[in-house]
Length: 288
Image 1 (cartoon, rainbow, N blue to C red):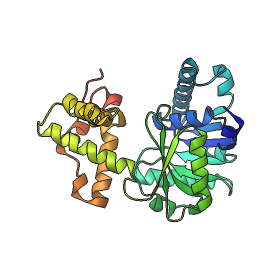
Image 2 (image 1 turned 90 degrees about the vertical axis):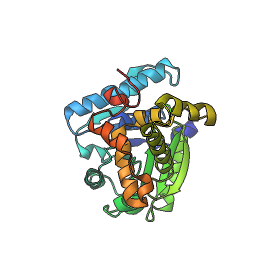
Image 3 (image 1 turned 135 degrees about the horizontal axis):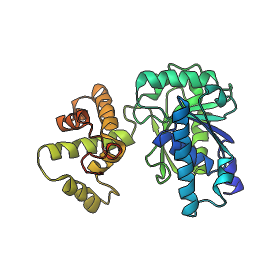
Image 4 (image 1 turned 135 degrees about the vertical axis):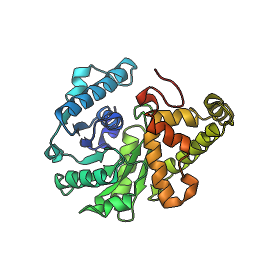
């Protein structure tokens, strides 16, 4: 970690939500020199978030990505159940589930506890940044920072600029993303942004092909991995993201962009059966 890297990352970062994505975001800023506070809904969730982040730190140490020992790195990390602990943060990234009302109420509560000079970002993968900004008091200090799963391994952060996002924040996000060793792509707010819109389109067509019996899941995925150099096939990726998550995004995109994003019945049936992908043990592949 160089002095130039340190200077491009906020000294104090908050993350709302310590699930898989939130923990990964916390880890990214921690290993880049920031002091990070994760706020969760209750003590049990906070402890689970702590374990996730410390597990990611331990893996980074084992792989030689960072130096030192775990105790040193965890000195700059805290978990909490109190939004007031965001008061000293220069940046807070919201990483709660993709539910509109939850996003709005969470962002409003965070904003109410921030200093006037702090910045706020949402990790939403599809919800309108302009729509969320309209519910906030300081929309010029708000944007989207869409991280990808798994965050420690992913090299991409999609920066989503709303109509009211200030120019200063647009520039700062580029510095922050570079500072955590990832590559930014900047898009203007639109349904599904760039990554979710394209990724879901491919995933939905792959599910339709499986539904119609065109080929097996393995052969559909191998066609993209071997033929197009994708690192993982669209059905395996859907399992990683979660069928329920992708279903929600598809339903939103259908409402905004029309029937080309209509979820296949196979997808709805799998979600109804609890076949959500890796996190449930079964999706298009069996993980049991």
